Image 1: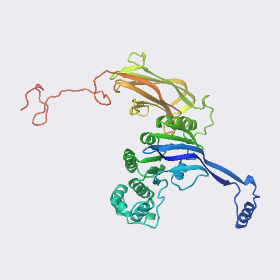
Image 2 (image 1 turned 135 degrees about the vertical axis):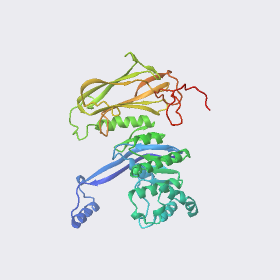
Image 3 (image 1 turned 90 degrees about the vertical axis):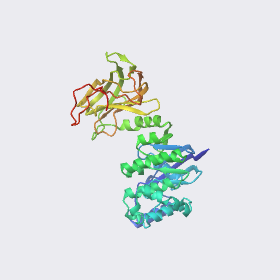
Length: 423
């Protein structure tokens, strides 16, 4: 049974193009609205959401992705009943805890201790239950020294630590988490992600909004891609994230500081990957290479205009979508100054470290320091890794063994056979 049902929900706002400059003008405009004589050209409706429908099952972790202004935060605010739909209906069967904005739900004049009990009461918890979890909440937030300080004196990081700690420990039926987690430092973000994974394993329903695609793919069972207030795609996280990149990220990609007006290729990209081929030690194209054998990968590209400081990458994923290794021109000593026209870049590996299996491969082309790639081919190439050198574990690492003579009492190597008896 679903715990959240969103049925044909729309949310729109009325935007005014003409602003009143004085009380007299505002009073006159109010009179015109009262008499229904307002000029229709002075107003405009903006749809934050338009006819959105979906269901979320109990225990699911669902992510919402999309560009800024696509309606992601509006969805969470509707579920949290902070705002209400213009049309349609939202049904949430259970208690909801939300972490949508830093400090949302806290009273600035109250201390951290008082706000913990206040938020717990709002969620319908008894004071005895809040008191039983109080120490765990404070320890998670790492605010033992400041728990009796008014929260108006907290930094934004302290706000979010306390807010998430409370929301994640009062055990609601549904937890709503917005991009607010990005406010914390790296250590706290990691802590939050571990807590979300723990809550998910315990069966809590989590609705997650983030621009961190790796976190969305790792945490979520299902993902919705929102664009201009509508659901563009939904389903498997990897597939939906791939469509988001192709639709939003790559269509807006370009060099940092570029004006984006240079005419690219016919598909709208300034540069693209045309194909990836794998070759063996003899330069013969193959679809299978044994573990520990040499591998050559050739990436064919076409730069429709001059691309400065290009970066090529290949990422190898196992059948269960775990990233096993990455080849990147950034990690090597070679530097490609620019690309122009059509060509091939070659990666040579003396000993392939992947263990036997079938690997799906991402190929990407970007500029060094750019936020988005010119082209990205997610899971579009395959490489079969056959049994070769014997290895246990996830990866074969080339290595050599040497047997050295034992040192004497002064730590110097003795010139005698290494297989002598031990005393």
